[in-house]
Image (cartoon, rainbow, N blue to C red):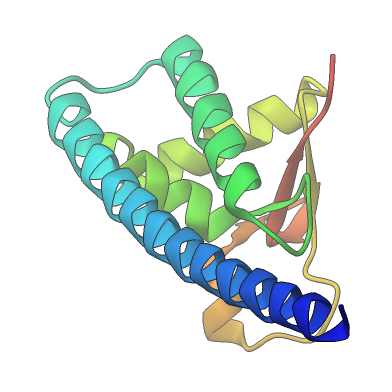
Length: 142
């Protein structure tokens, strides 16, 4: 009986290892598909410049996708990743202006980086003349 139990444990361990490997493959395929979709979205959306309501919708959609991918800080998305996801539809100035407007309307919370970061990395975030330097965004649940 003990030999059967040991064999069952080995079979189960082998099955778990196969499932883990397959999950890794599926996650890689999903990431490639996300990248393709992001590329298509950039191509399609770069034809038309985005107004503020369109920015709100696109930013929320991008935030939700990025937030699902984040495994560390759930609910918090780096501003540079959000900017890259929205792509060339917006100039940096318009992106930052709209993000600050969302913050002032109470729809998002802008947060500084919790640690010390290089000036180059901070430039990837958002530096506002009166509000300060921010690196993360969190969408408020309304």
